[in-house]
Image (cartoon, rainbow, N blue to C red; front, side):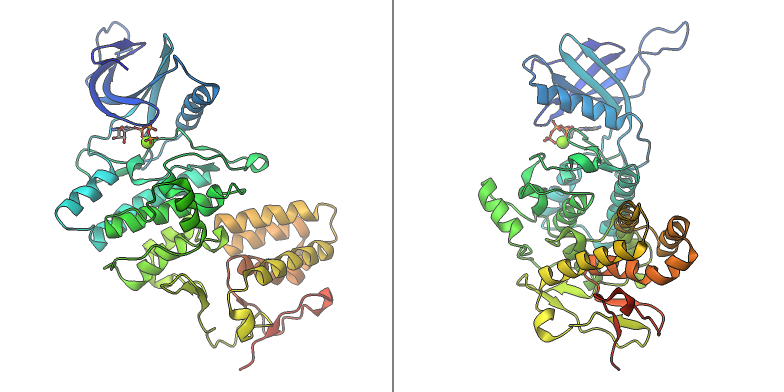
Length: 417
Ligand code: ATP
Ligand code: MG
């Protein structure tokens, strides 16, 4: 595309070339003063993303429209704010907040050039801001799908970081959660690479890769071909970790974000909770050993906790299928016992809340509203157990006299000792 500096597009004039991405060019820009009686351009500097629609394929056009549709209503301090858009002579111009402090990618590489990595304090501050942006997106049912260090932009003084580039973000639509290959591949989650259905947890994977990059100065997964990348990511092995200097809790958190099984990854709310109150964060009962084999932590001794029967050595050995099957069985049991014509819908709603990280007491309130007090008292421990199973937690809190034998097929017994 020719140099467009000085070119007027609708109410916008392009000032200076900034950078290019795989789909477009970015310029600084100014907007016309639309106040009555005024002419000329306002002083504020914006960023304008210019996309040529000349030879645009339908997919290309769709990406532009999608970016506009998604960015328009979003207003959050950690999300790049969209201001204006226009299409002139097959050139689309998207005007947004200008972040002059550069990208997180550049910042990490600048540090690396000086043989440094981001310090722990800066890491925590940066991750908190990015996570708040992601939380806002997930609360708005938007999966970004292209979270990466090049799409995280600093404001002038580098005090605030914002998530940008929604070219491939899209609204969550359960019915069409089939994967399409999008974005820079290094941050793609196993489920996207394997073209399986995905949800918000795909963003958590990418965020995990972003954290890894902040901690080490290098991509978590960097391979020449899609095949080798896919093989490495889907093997479930964590990247060989050059020594990360952050404390163990942070390291574990990063590892959990990069769990191959999406249900094992924390929700964005859990990540924020960890960042705000690290001491209250309960690590999962599982962790990865450095070789990538999943191992169980020995369950803590606590008289109010129940441990799923079958915690023998054999079961403990990462038999994921066994737990998935149990979770499925538990759901069927719940549906049967709910005795409600909308039982599956109720369960889907509750599971969605659990996946979003909604607080247990709020989920319980909703469950009571849907099924009534009596049924809730009887079945809520199962609802909770279902969540625990999905998240890989094998111990459930519950009343000492928890008796679920009425289900016939499902049993939770108090833990010995
Ligand atoms: P890719 O697929 O590589 O992400 P893209 O076509 O989606 O590319 P963008 O990521 O939107 O393009 O922009 C390319 C570059 O322009 C960014 O890496 C960044 O350096 C710069 N840039 C983008 N948006 C802004 C902004 N709002 N403020 C300042 N610089 C920006
Ligand atoms: Mg980009």
